[in-house]
Figure 1 (tube, rainbow, N blue to C red):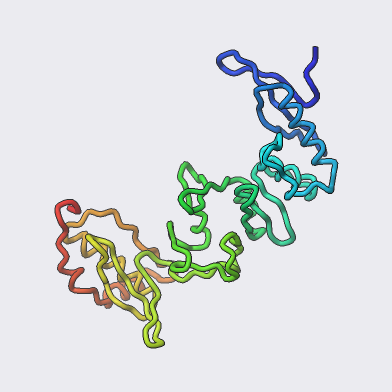
Figure 2: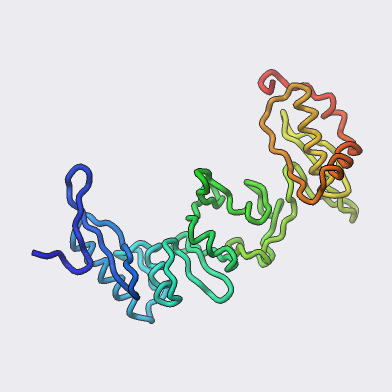
Length: 268
């Protein structure tokens, strides 16, 4: 006796049987998932067929009791409407695309990022968004030049106030560098560099963010020479040649508290 349409049976390593569901649409074979019962697998097939053949079904039609996962629902509707299939939950719009983190959270990205997110699944952890890249979890903010664990409102802002809109024109970077903060006093803007040792230590105030970033690097070198073995991340100054960096490094003044800093035993 044959199985229901769209279903085939397979075995686990322990010999138990489970059921896989799939559908072919526009000559593409699409896997719909694995199920513990033949009927569930068949229902997933029927639901996929219904989605692909009824234009009135939209992304907002998804129900929590659906036979298909929400990710698969998005992939199928995008394939139906835009004729491109992605395994990740992407839906193409004009000049940008949506990435569905959940049925209720959609992220917006520029079309230039389509290939990247078609091949990298976004994960959420403690309010930060990551992808797995070369075996590591990489914060997606790094694609904008924002350092890991950058703080919204401190290191960057969303220009339109929408924190789900990751299109490049919508993200303004306030602080690009580790240990640097933009400050304003009496109408004058300056950049403050601090380093976290046993508490936060002021390195100095500087006229540009690059000077403050170089000062942070210089402070790292000083405290390391003084015996501190903490693992600091240096700022990379892409716009400076080696000679420009050396000149800036040499002339920048550093707080005496940093120069005289002696690390406690747990930092040595």
